[in-house]
Image 1 (cartoon, rainbow, N blue to C red):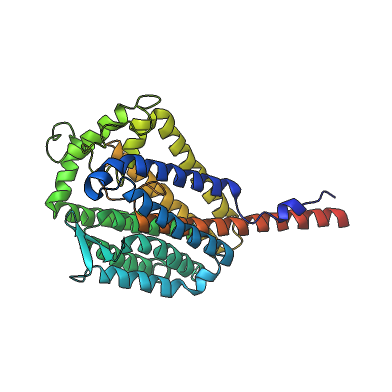
Image 2 (cartoon, rainbow, N blue to C red; image 1 turned 180 degrees about the vertical axis):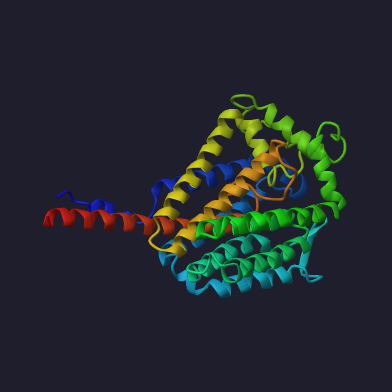
Length: 386
């Protein structure tokens, strides 16, 4: 009988880990490239944003390693405290004098030396809570009153907290995570379709009630016609990506980061990737995200219990949704949203929470590999006995 001792030693998915670390490495390089001139102008230190991102990476690496060592199953017992803590942070950021304003939005808690964005914490907390709740109620998920309605109401409350911070993108992200996990858990399709149809007029109201959101729609529909107004950022992003060609202008040689493209190191860092690294660099980034999603789905579907499956699906959905939305915004395929490019965009809270989520996904992948190994061993023992 063939020995599988080597397979037994595998405790995580090395392909998933390699793809995540490759994205982080690209992110650190691009954050410096996109922010060096801005940092020198504003902070008199070209490495200002890079150093802060490296510190966030160090914290994220510790969080990722800790979660991998402890195992995802322990999160089930902490689901309620985690989501309550995230909600308290979301409320705290709305308190005058505590929450910090930027571009008309109050999304950050300013602390000495760094700032905390609670909505990034809420996304991961929501996945953990929802996975635990659906796993606990898995026999009743198909029912409207127990499996569907309570989760929709709770999601509505959390989305409302995001909207109070003028964070429409995070509110939509929470709802996407909800419907993804409800679908995975086996909720009735008719409930999902009906709730989406009911949500459309509500979403229209929130868009129409804020003039800046309407202007974003106008800029999305006609970026060149509004190039000198609300479409300026989208137009500059398109020029940035388009000027890269096949191989790019060269790392560090991009022009749009020279105070032409706002948020070049945060929301629009993908544009700088396209400009400096060209179609080749963009393709590498997209392929790395495809690998993360592929291995994430593989881990989720191979998990040995529903909680692990839902966690894996939720985290994979989070990575995929934010990556697709961010890249689509940069290419003018969606209206502007304040969602970071996972592992790449500048932002300490985002990087730490994405790496923490990656650690959870790696823990799920370890469980899936052990379950697969155990299944093979049992099959081989059955053949030997026969």
